[in-house]
Image 1 (cartoon, rainbow, N blue to C red):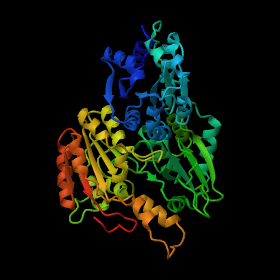
Image 2 (image 1 turned 120 degrees about the vertical axis):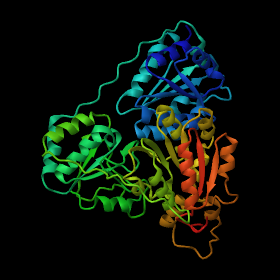
Image 3 (image 1 turned 180 degrees about the vertical axis):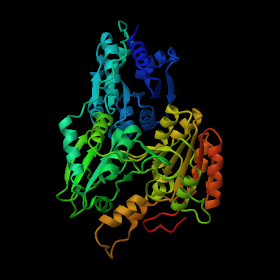
Image 4 (image 1 turned 45 degrees about the vertical axis):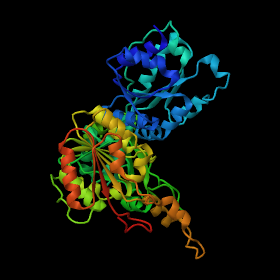
Length: 527
């Protein structure tokens, strides 16, 4: 058995069922091994950022890793942005990166690069295999690392001669690493703080935003009067009718500070100490109020469910409030971001997976969907745009019985637009809504917040040229049709509602270009 065959056999034995791939010459023996393994689905991606983003979406929804197959350092580099998002999401994900044969590396061939240095920026585990006899064990170790709580990006670098050489053997599937237990003293200390009567908040992140952990946290909040919040961009938030309503921390620092104002204690449950995304002149980076004590009940790698259960035992019994079933009214007239949100809230399917990279045009979505049928909400965890379309592909493959609704800003869509080809190629049930305001509106907003006072001598050409997407206007209908995805364009609320209803009723991929006005900048009134 050669090294590539041992890798693939170990992957299959370890429960890896999908490989998102953009292979090259160094990975041909791995492709040949996949040819002989019908239990692993090889999904082609036209760009490595699609492969890594799809593996992120798969891992978030399946709770187990998918693999990527990437070609040398440049291939890995193309996928780094969405690996950054996956790292921030705590997603279980395994990268297989092919490299030159070991004797060839010293020749400094044109594609030679420092793969390990690049991989180290996004990987929680990294190993280079140099011996075919060790490749099975190295692969099993990579899977185990990816599965360690709450999930990690694991990268295994495979030189081509390790893949083609014989003397390899598969390894048995690894044991799932145990989660860290939270000590009784920590739980008791948090319980005492929450019973003190002083204003407190619970900030949820990681696994705490779903399942029994979410419900337990809501009961703790109900029992103590603590405010229930979650991180700005949760990896996966369970929402909808019958589920606890969790307030997401605002993106802008002044909004987040207003949400936290007056708190004397902030308890982190799978979340990080909140900070602003960027520095602003004269403002602190940390968001908790001055004098607020920030304490951790459980980190994202801990047994959050068990810690919350023990905390609940120390508090009075309470019933958490849940979202009441409610539908928004379908919109009429002008098509705006608010109208798109109303239509999504009116038509949200039961069990939908919503991938949200709508950015500024999606401000109204949370309120419009609070009482919609139960659904999962996936967000831009690391802030690196170009995640939405690939994330939707991975989520759809992880949960083929659930509809996926991808809400995508036009500028962000262009980063990984080739994901639409994968949507079509794999026949994925994804309805993509591109909110086309023909502007990098978030940059318009940040420019107005950060730029110095207007200079009467300035022409404004740099701002116009760098933030405007209307010269020429992107035609997402033709772009989608060119990649095999049925597509329409909506310019009114009635049009959009009818097109969304039709797309959701039909299986397979669809795209709707929703022409909406920008909220910020000189083009905010353009449609």
